[in-house]
Image (cartoon, rainbow, N blue to C red; front, side, top):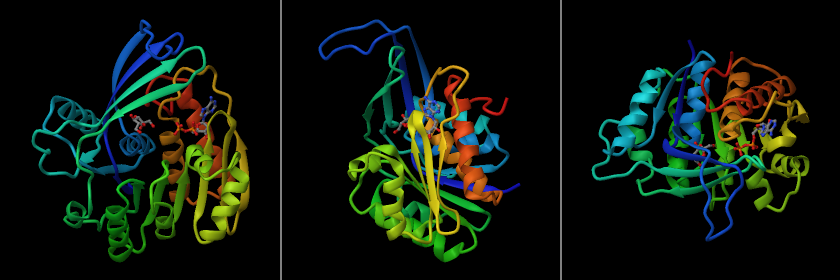
Length: 289
Ligand code: ADP
Ligand code: FRU
């Protein structure tokens, strides 16, 4: 079984479903509420474990109840937490999510008060067993150290980097990855209104990388030196139930496709297909059924 390490955050997601998103200073009653373990990196690992990989997570937990709950949830899915000590008097990152039935939008307020995971903790990990290491793009200087260590001690492993938010210096780290997973929001923050021209521009700077850019309900684009540029329309889900985490599922499917050696277009289709399955159900469980 291939082994994957993910480096990033876990969150507690408090998700309210509402009929219509409220105006500022307004109020609205939720149709329902659920709590979920979230976070881009752990979401991606949860999907990869369903796809048959042995997954480990490197990130911080606090000593609060939410962290204990998240830890148990990951354990139950066979995902090992590589941290040793929860951070004392900390609070797990919490995301307050409002899902609007009317538009399908998900509005998120992030509460973040836990130190970012970094190179000192990462230096203590034995990396020898990994076939792939996936990094969430945050905490840029520390990320650079961690990626450099992987390249140094594990030259044969695949490395992916998720670039979701515009953060100072983050895009420069793409050159240390094999696969770069951009978000629509990142492309838009650079002034691009569609993925083809964005990926073409990125390919100038990163000709050796496979580049992907998910574009929500429209689909996704990808580009690499050998495969050129390709586009895949979104696969229409049977019904749209919950799009929260669709991008994390997309990323997991891309990593899976790369590990199986699929060519660019086939892998992109696989990613859009799995992400659409996700949109048709609540949460991330049983995506393959
Ligand atoms: P995120 O969840 O990070 O905001 P996106 O919204 O870009 O990420 O979605 C990731 C992928 O999920 C898209 O490339 C697409 O394949 C799929 N997807 C998202 N929304 C829909 C939708 N409404 N219908 C079909 N597929 C969707
Ligand atoms: C979904 C998600 C949520 C989390 C938020 C973090 O992609 O990972 O689970 O709260 O994004 O940005």
